[in-house]
Length: 325
Image (cartoon, rainbow, N blue to C red; front, side):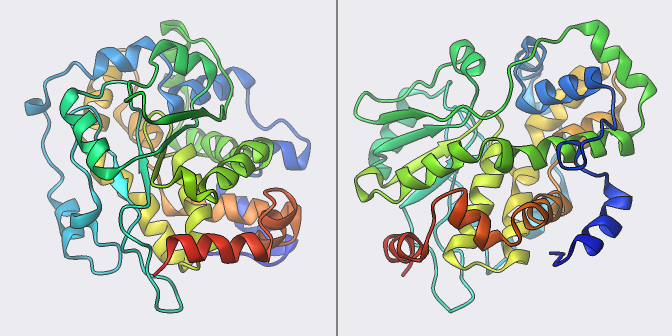
C-alpha cells in the first residue's frame, strides 16, 4: 500500500519500524545493524561455504510452482537458465497499465556473475549483452569479481557498506526476535535508494543509452539492491505497483534452494531457522516501506525520480520508447 501523507506513513510504521536516518533516532544497536548489512549482501565466507551443500538435500517449495500459471509476469518464459546463476531473468513481457509490455531481450536482472561457465558465456553471447552493471560493494567485487566475456562493458556502481563479521556476532542473533530483525532490515532497505541515489541515477543513465542495451544488472543475491532497481525501472515504465511487488518477490522462488542451503548452514552456527528465513526472503511490504519512505522525504515517487535520479519527462519518454512495445 502506497501512502500519501506523513500521518499515514507514521501510522503504518508503528507496525514495521521507523527509518532511523529519517527520524534522527537510533532504534537499534548498531552492532546488529552492521550484522544484517553483511548478511543481506552475503559478503562473508560463511555463505560461500553454505553454497557447497548439495542441492539434493533441499526440498522444492511446491506452492511456488503455481507461479508458472501466471499470465502477467510470464514467470516460466522470463527465467534464463545458467550454470553459474540462479536468479537471472528477463524483464521482457511484463505488462504496463496502458496496455504495452516490456520488450524481450533488452534488460535483464541477475544475482552475482562470478561463477559463469563457458556455456554461460555462450548464453550471454546469444542474448547480445553489451553492459554488465554491478551494484556490489568494492569488497564484494574484489572477493568475487564478475567473470564475463571481454566484449561486455563492465560498470561497478557500489551500493552498501563493507563490514566485517565473525561467528561471535552471529551468535548474538539468538537473543533477537524475527520481528526485530525485520525492522532492522527495513531500515537498511530504505537507505538504499536514498543514501545511494547517485548510484541509481547513474544506473538509469546507463540503461537510457541504447548503446548499453541489452544489459544485465545485478548485486550478490539479485534480490535487494537489484530488486529496488527493478522496482524503480518498472515504475518508470508504467507497471502497476502490485505487479511490481509480485516481480520483486519472485526472487524467493528462484533462490529457494540457495536460501535453504544457507538456512541449513547458519543453523549449524546457532542461528534460528526463522531468523535466516527473515534474512533471505524478500516481501512485498518491504517495497511498501521503501516507496513510502521516498514519498515522505521527497513528496512523491515522481519527485524523487526527477530531482534525485534525473528522470524528467524527456528521459521517461526515451526509456519507454526503448524498452516498451
